Length: 187
Image 1 (spheres, rainbow, N blue to C red):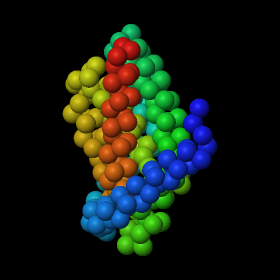
Image 2 (cartoon, rainbow, N blue to C red):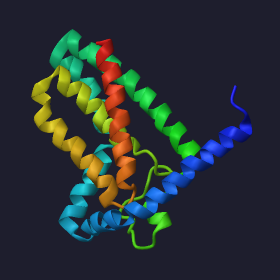
Image 3 (cartoon, one colour):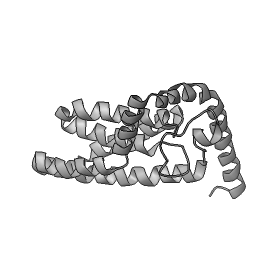
């Protein structure tokens, strides 16, 4: 069993590393966040972010069995399991690492849409977009023309709207891919 002082020391190292990433990523974050000043782009990014809130994924899970029968049902059940695992994982990481969102930490970042929760790392929207899209497209490639661009827009929207650093989105994507791989191994 790990000693509590060692766990705190390790946690402080992780938080210090994230603080260094914050500063390194600030310029890129600010550059991308300036996109929110253009109304048409802002509306697209807000719509993409809202799509990633969950309702779209619930719709996908409901439609797969209707469109693909037993195969679609199996895929939906596994996607529900990986979605639940993703939710637990990203909530644990956010609670443990407590990385403030860019708009809180940097006055030069404009918040263009309210966040669903307090902390930034990792991006849960990106995690789920990549997790669900990857599983759906591997099993039903004809969905790729819709889901791949949508997952990309959801991920990009999180930085443009001032809600995440690029590394939050990258970490969410990598976790989503790992969960998708685990899910695909079950199907």
